[in-house]
Amino acid sequence: MRLTQWTDYSLRVLMYCAASEQREQRATVGEIAEAHGISRSHLTKIVMTLSGLGLLETTRGRGGGLRLLQPAHTIVVGEVVRQTESDFTLVECFDAEHNSCRLDGHCRLKTALREAMDRYLEVLDSVTLADLIAPAPGARNQRVHFLPGLPRPPELAARRTRVSAGGESR
Image (tube, rainbow, N blue to C red; front, top):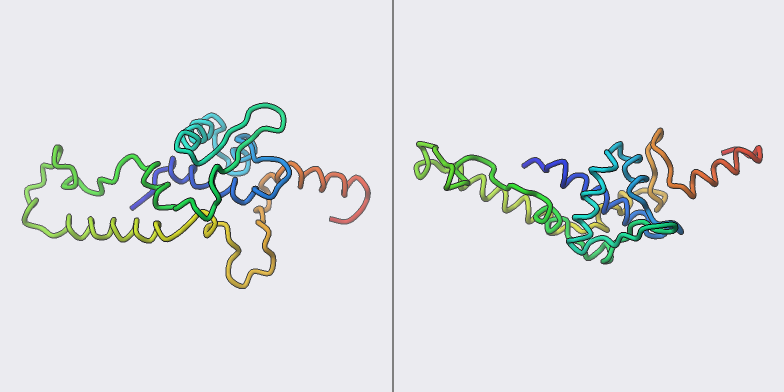
């Protein structure tokens, strides 16, 4: 199964917010959009959906931003996928209304795919948002590392600018 871009971006927003929980400043739509190279207007729609699902709190204005409404360890990835995916019809025969397959009822593909989908979601049901942002086994540092070339969160960028201006090494 392939996740839609909507679900992919939804998971990225949630992960970014979870990884940013300890920051002084809340994550913003603009910051996440820039970090991932996603359209800000598209991401705003996703954030509003996640807010409507009770996963995010959004606050406008100065000092505003996004924060998780539930602890990351209680947000189950399988549930997020079910709530953000619009279509679990893997093949035509999954949709009785539009099924024109002449083999329907005589082949086992539908059963195998249904079982694969159930197992796929079962695995995602065993993963929480906290699991997705946990350091890899054997990792030395507990902090989230941002990829080179991507913008840094505002407080890190400001700290880096101050250090550079003061003549100290990075």
